[in-house]
Picture 1 (cartoon, rainbow, N blue to C red):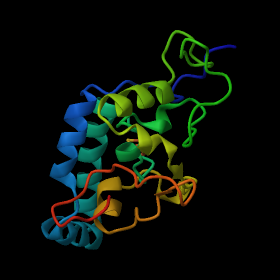
Picture 2: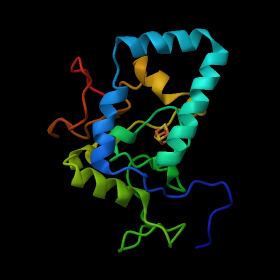
Picture 3: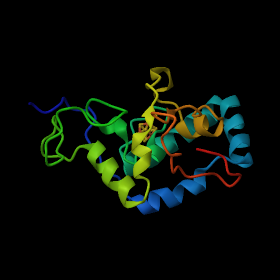
Picture 4: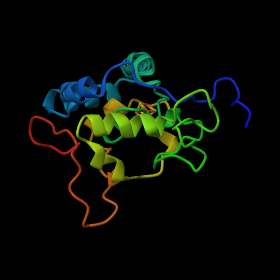
Length: 178
Ligand code: SF4
């Protein structure tokens, strides 16, 4: 199969280790000051644009973030599923090679294989069983941190069956599920 057009997502391996990214999540976990900040940002479009630009630069560099606005990283080993050329949110397509290479970019590792390897290594393999909600394209380009702090990410994923074990997702300081 031919390579995808220029500018199309390419599987991205995060710059930081799985262990580091899981540990760092505590820094952005929802808490009062962040909710206050998110509210302020939403009332001031210019500030919000600057904040969103900062998020874009940071997350693009580390995760290859495509600014979908509904961040799945905590449930995917911090490997961004939107860097899959097909932007699949619920695991790899049928084209991933037996050695774990991407069908569209055979020289690259499938981002879902990367996600599985990272989550397993950090003891979060069960997160990959979660079902991800379809992406709401109206959120494209918006700050996922603001959405997260405003509680809009609730229901972003769900257990596949009621018998599934509770996902091992990181929790905020107040014990809030993320
Ligand atoms: S906000 Fe969306 S595109 Fe960006 S890292 Fe998270 S899942 Fe990937």
